[in-house]
Image (cartoon, rainbow, N blue to C red; front, side):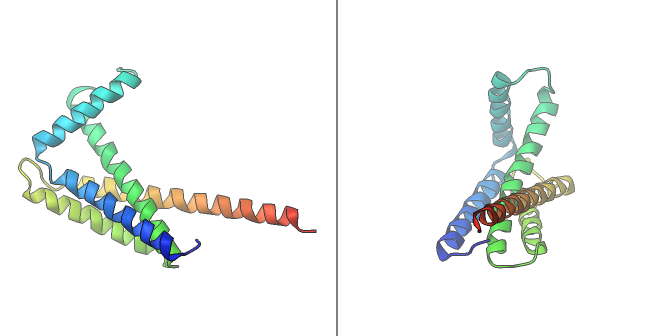
Amino acid sequence: MIRTDKRLRLCTVLIVCNLIFIWGNSLLPANVSQAISDAVMELLSRFFSTGGPQGDTGSFLTRKLAHFTEFAALGLLLTWRFGMLGRKKYVPLNWGVLAACADETIQCFVPGRGPGVRDVAIDTAGVLTGMLLLTLGHIYFTKKKRRKQQENEP
């Protein structure tokens, strides 16, 4: 990945914003978090069939999918950041797992919330997915660029 100071700064700012979003949501009391999940479920039900899970199960799945998605974004950003620095692939994974553990630790101190090993596993799966998406995208575009260069050579 091409490294420039501007790209490193941008990526670092995006990582910090992502972590503020993740940890900010973890600081919300359970009733507020539940209300947000219910509002998201209501919004999604307008666009998708209501034949899926409803009630507690649907809200549970919405929250877990949100965890997965926000940590997939973190995994993508960490892979981008450390890829520009030429670090090995386990470095972004380690940082992602550390962020997931910190996220669950924060919830120990919030009314109605608590830590969960399952949530760390979901978050880690999200980080791995983000890492994989960026890596596959990088491979695809690198090969595409090489093919284009080979076509343009005499």
